[in-house]
Image (tube, rainbow, N blue to C red; front, side):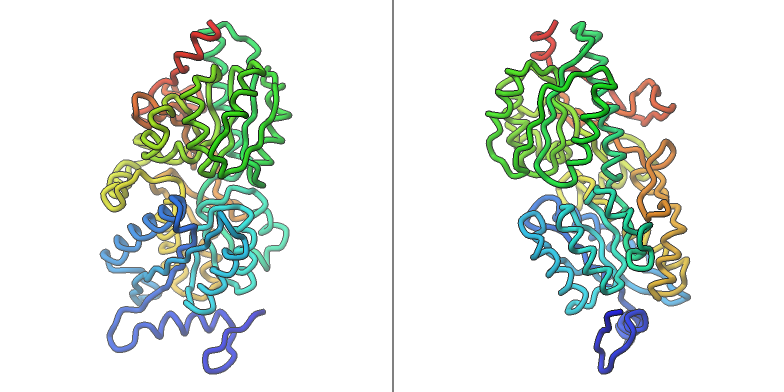
Length: 428
């Protein structure tokens, strides 16, 4: 077990308690320092920060966190991981946050390859890390494989890539049904377009198995860089392959260039899947309005998933000027951490881990419960995810369907999916 030097060598759990309580000297409120980890020069990191700021301000204004009868305020530490560009920078940033900034907890993380490295640093230091960005399932299966080492890791958002894939395929089914109804296309041809990153591999591999089982023909797979600024060649090849649908798996800035060129070239294939850039309010302007009709899995939309959803969105926009992406789940993470600390009545790490394992939190995206691998549970009645489509310049929720055909789940404010008109014209 690594040690931290504070005048003498002290076990980490004891050190944590000393660092937290010592902040309350001189009549000042006790402080719990939370490192918000993300690529702060990109929207993903900014939303990590905005979500955490909003939650910290609300919690502190309401009296802070009550731990065993003592009140603690949250102090945030911004940790710029630069993780989209450098795995090494990401690991070093977390190391500094723990050993120099002396943070007690971590929230955030986005790019899978970097989060694996950051996770190792956090586990070395027995620091609780609530993930709010990386979807790869193995980040959580590590908990089951080696509990004693990885028990400090929990995923708050998004749902893991296996569950993302399940929702993805359901969204794909929505588009296929419309093609059959409006255009008579009974066996749609699908082009898989996924950024060349590790998290996307599982979805691409699953698509290879599931799409034929769904009665679809795969015409090819394209894997551009997540930062590609020009994907016209890929789109032209997809059109030449006769695709009716483009099945996307994109988290990086390539999502803007893809959607802009897809709409501008009027590629006669409906776009559906995951495009994180399309989850942002600025997507419409960034694509010069050519992102109209793009459909993506999302976490937030202006629909009533819970009583807190729309009020949170409004507060987030007021605070940041932007619509929240799923990385703003740091907001949820801080409330989950507050509840765990209060249940534990202690800042001792193992006590907080045990309390986090008992989480049953209904917040902005649904009911959050962790499974045995500390992964957020995906199911009707828990966190489901959403399918949104850009319609008339607005981000509209189109899944779960408004008719309740998926497990009876209906969110107030949902509308029907629309096939792009040029796709209908091409195949009718």
